[in-house]
Image (cartoon, rainbow, N blue to C red):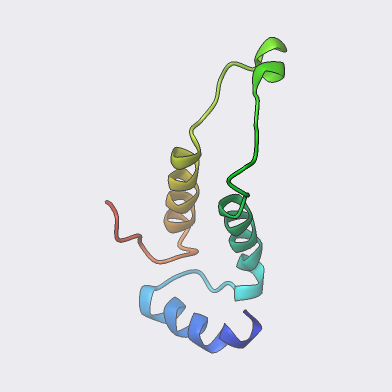
Length: 84
């Protein structure tokens, strides 16, 4: 992503975003990429967490929408095309 600084600067100017370097936001990209690149044969069990009293949860889909809504409201990324 290091070669995308000029492209990012244009996006920032076009959408009146916060003046953040792309390298400062890459961590968000790495987190979201990591979350979507989990192998499909992953076996996950929340029983131990539930047995220890952790009953509240948020769906993965809602978590992603919350993340991108947060980034948009903070003016780190352009407004998403899917909603408000």
